[in-house]
Length: 138
Image (cartoon, rainbow, N blue to C red; front, side, top):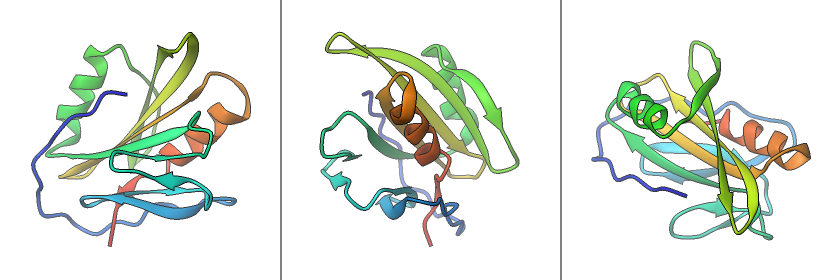
C-alpha cells in the first residue's frame, strides 16, 4: 500500500458516520475512520487479524491534491456525495487481486482513507463500508 506524507494543518471538526457492525475509531493526525472492534492497530495502519483487509489514513492540505494523485494512479470515481468522494483501484499483492477504496473528504484539510481488501464478496463490501466512514476527528 502506498503511503504519502502531508503536513499537518489545523482542522474543523467533523465526525465519521457511524456504521452498524463497526466500532472505532482508528485515528491518524486529524483524521479517523470507524473499524470493527477486533482490528489491530500498528504504526502505519489498522487491519483485521488475518491482515487481508486494512486501512491507512493520511491528511492532505486539499481534496484536489489527493484526487489528482489517485487519478494519476488509475483510481476511478465510483460515488460522491456532499461529504466524501469515493474512488477505487485494483492492485495485486502476493498473487491476489485486491480492491483499494480511496475515500476523500471534501474539507480543507482533507482526510484520505485507503482501504484494501480481496476483490469480491464480503471483504470488498466491508472495505467500502469502512472507507465511507472517513472524517475529521473531534
